[in-house]
Image: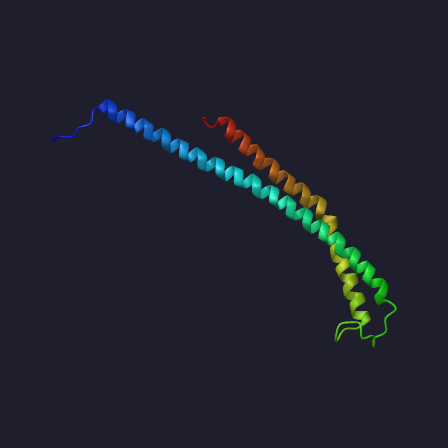
Length: 132
């Protein structure tokens, strides 16, 4: 028995296969673009979390400094092998580093906002162009 396919039927099958492949590619691209937007949103949440942590940590260190200044080197409430002077210096160093990080925060926020804007724009453009 000879199994020859009618050329018209073969062309229809090829067209169905092509459309299915395009649909799979569109779904994949949509998923990639959606994932990029979600990742950008998560980065902004992480940024805000770190910024909040740094602000809180700075306040903790400033409060801690108030109790460190009057402490004697022999004070047993400090960690082993540390001195109040060492703790004061380290706290001030950390506060200075936190201040630098917080000062850079607006630039970082602007960058992350722009990354999110671009990701959303790409998703919107693809959604408008992609066949339904």
